[in-house]
Length: 166
Image (cartoon, rainbow, N blue to C red; front, side):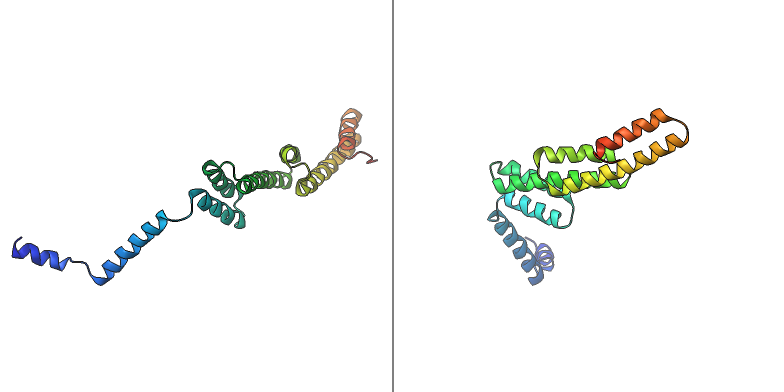
């Protein structure tokens, strides 16, 4: 090496600050290699996303965790709950938008794999009541417009949604 190369090397030599940064990076790599298995990391991400009410991200992370450990009942249960949460959230959104029939279809999907889901039952009741009220109004308007056939259709559908409503 020439004197010039030595001087350049010394001028770009490792400072204490660079050395500590390098040690931190190296230790994080070593610790990362010894860290929890990927399924635990994904599960932790799923729980954090759930706490932030980001159900889709929670579901995606739980699916990644399941891919790593498909037989883990804790992760399986969590993934199923996230799937239900996504469907319930979609149903709620559609019901608020006045698209009750779409919401009811989503709620039916939830109830196929969570038959006793109380939240789904409550939203189903709300959707049916809301739809029945709109149909009842449509039936009354049809009667006022001298359209008894449309009125009868509307009132029959109200009775389907709310048996005993008279």
